[in-house]
Image (tube, rainbow, N blue to C red; front, top):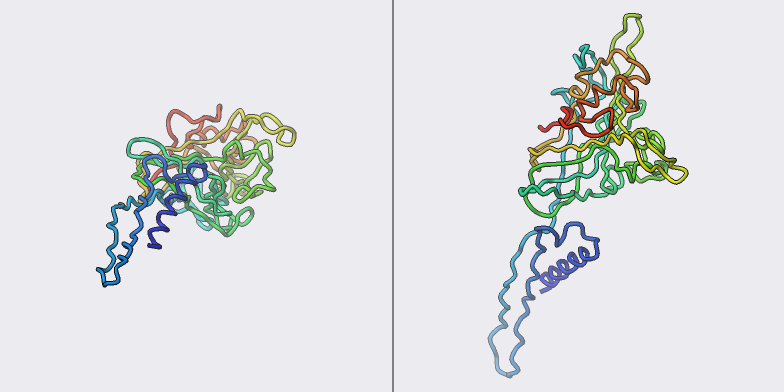
Length: 331
């Protein structure tokens, strides 16, 4: 009896949370909360002084419909071609001049993670706040370990998953946005919760966060006998209007957030890959054409158009291109 009363109370509580906006997935969409089975109360004994038959339980007519929510884990990986991205590895034949490169950073933010139902409807994943990698539906993926060339700005901790919950059901297909949402992009980084508290992934209040920070150090010497400079890729919003310290940023002319859609994604089987070799395949990693080394997302940087195109962003507008980029793929 106690177990059944607990089940009834849990189901009632779950639906109550949904009604008040606290339950994200319970009692919504196609999901059905577990049926409240009647108590298996025994029949009261007769008042006769003679012995009577033992009490009989009331038949259980309730049906177990299963959990209302489904815990999900989306696996990500950083690759350089077919090889795992690592701070201690030298990768050969990258870019248009077949450069050899050591990685110095590989981190990026994602938000608006969604799974796609069989009927084509996109369902938001309610990310689990863990006070470190995920908070308020923003997640940080970190593939550097703070060693070798990554020691300057990096840290030892790494993260390759996004975790959350969706209404129970069948899903095939994944969507997410590379970057930090506008509402959180221009807050005070010094007081923001993790993972938005990292100074190494923040430009300024006006420009906001580095949505992706992927850096490489080409190996060798140029014709003048000098070491090649780094090739940096820092993605973030630019042409922002307003002052975060005086009324707030009102808009950014080039948002540079990338919606990624992977219709062949299979939950529990697929892995989302960010491929550095594909990202820089049309770039000369050995020559800086002007401005900061590599692409820093700001207007007038000659290294940016090729990288943006492979990512799937229009460098001139900061909006997604009609043709998806090649940097994200599934394995």
